[in-house]
Image (cartoon, rainbow, N blue to C red):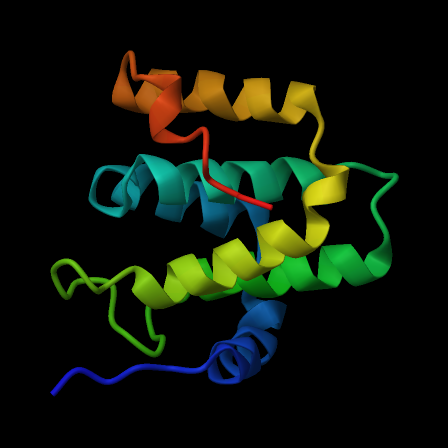
Length: 136
């Protein structure tokens, strides 16, 4: 039986782990899971990271980003990451929610930096694979 989680359950978990965030932990996690997590999830993480570093972003938006990135980092979450196919689905929900909420802060430069990092890790890729990452 497949268990589904509500957005409020994921947000509650994000709030519980937000204090565990650090840049070093994020980059360590990214480097160890980027292939398993996939292009789209890593793109979302990178965009959130670059928004977080922007001094013009509000504290509220940064708090939401901290929660989403911390949730991505922690080894314990609603659906363990090692479970094939569905392991990153809860992380994806948290990342998507946060990115959608702060999308107005995402600049073309942030998108470019994220794409350059993706190319370094994944090699050449088709932009259409990430073009619809956040649809509005």
